[in-house]
Length: 124
Image (cartoon, rainbow, N blue to C red):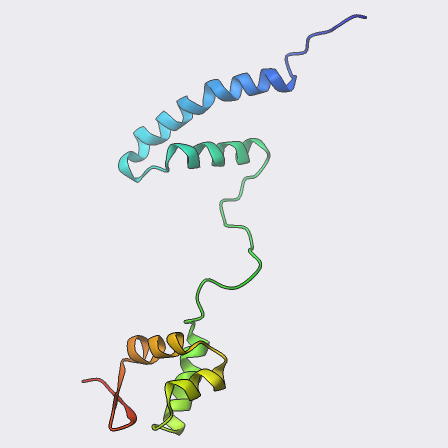
């Protein structure tokens, strides 16, 4: 059985990568200083680049969005309050399908309103 050694085997490429990675990290650290990516993040992006990835945008994620405090929900709540100033947070929650806490945050922080005499008014 004859064995031929190839310089392009996985083990050889792994050795090259292990030699180049620290050098690449040092170059990035020197160029960007404190704003540089961490060592592990640099290694992750380097390995993605070696696998053929060239775009730097995030991949699409499935599932629940990070925040439901979007403009659409803010406008929906604002319209409900305009139509009935005496509406409660619980009623806002049931009509919009959002949680009570989220409705409260949107009303108080985003719409900058407070409740006085059982109705919502803009904060001065």
